[in-house]
Length: 627
Image 1: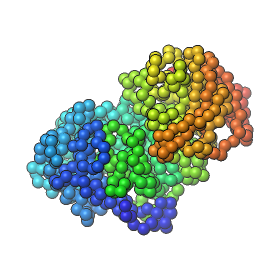
Image 2: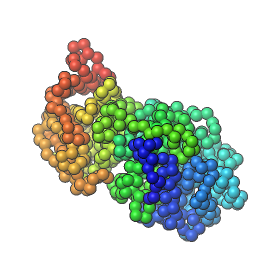
Image 3: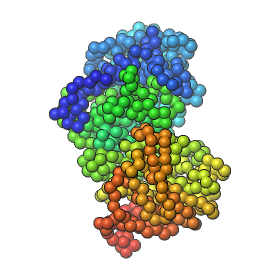
Image 4: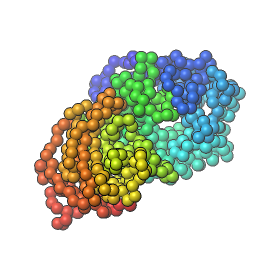
């Protein structure tokens, strides 16, 4: 990819300016359009097909790249030196002539999500692209083509979305149709239903759940905030959702490492720098607490992070993976066009060249200014960053991606949600390998997995913070669950140190416990036993992660005898201190060399810290009961 020369005066951290974003968009579009069908209705990009099939994948390539082109042209007030909109106008005409026909041009029709639903996802990108470029594209289409495009889009209004962020796809279609004078009762129903669900999914502190369960991940920014906030911005309506975006960005700036990497957590990570789209949206709409120089640092840092690490292949295409291709990062619904949801990051181009986002000097990212600990009680997450290495860690005590009706006894673990910790520099090991950052109860040689997570709270005070949860261990063979078996867990973060404290209750005779650490090359992380553990070794994971082709995991083992508490110190890195710990069935005490001490009490959980004993007059930071 050919980009302009760096500007280290304006952008001392990344060297990137607005011109780099424009050039990146043009380069990605030019490469993708080499794979267009003759009429331009589909971009049949090379690669393994998704579960929806190649025709849907071709529509996906068209729709998602259209979004990048729309942001790029709209941000230039209609200037289109490469003629992108002419190509998309031809594709709109060809794709809607005979929808559903099995030929090179026709788009698949939109149906219910559980039948052939992927086209509903793409309808939102088509609709949003048309709304952004209305004066230069939609208004110039022949009336007959407009009618055909409308009829295809209305399929999203007439069919059932998946029970999550998908309801924002018909919402976005309806918003476009309303903006061009084609609103009716059908569009009103779609918008009202989406907004009703969105209110129910809002948990506070700027966080939405992605559906009725506890799925908190990057979809919060690149979908659940993006569609309603951008809809109101384009309509010039009061910003009901804007304050929520602002509140989200209060913490979301810490989701990016000093190298620009977003946290490797949750699903659809092949969308890569789309993770920064909420930051661009906040800058464009004004609903952000971040200074312009910080916003651009985060945006350009994320873009450059992936462009510098082989996310674009030899054909100039975004591959299915993280850096380069990486199959375990990819979901079954992702095909060759899927990575182009990264186009959402180009929302930042709606800020014109004279906007402070582009004229302010870059400032350090939050992870570069000081060691930080940030508790997010609503999603049940704890963020921990260290300035010296720029690494951000996420400790997960609340996001499990299970629907309320879904059985937690299904022992197929999800590596992108079930682990206790994630970071900007490590990825989870795949299912075929030993699980990193995992606490397992081992019964008859079978290791448990962590499915539904029950949060117990999170809090912070100055230099340290904590988060807690409990779960029922489930197993892949024999009985799916052991009656009465539960694990109660607390993570305490201070500096680069992570205390991992687990209490096991109701284990059957002969059970064991096992704790693993970070997935790194040998010697690049620490897992030290402090209380309860008897054995220590390394587990090999030859399938590696999205970051490293081969990793090993430090591992601790111990016997479970009645109610047992285990305490370990984990460090992503090699520098650590000699901590001293003691544990009983009721809790644990851990002391640092400088005298700082943490007390953890179970039943109900209490976490406190300081230089004095909380049982002699000190007050706990926070508390809560085990459900």
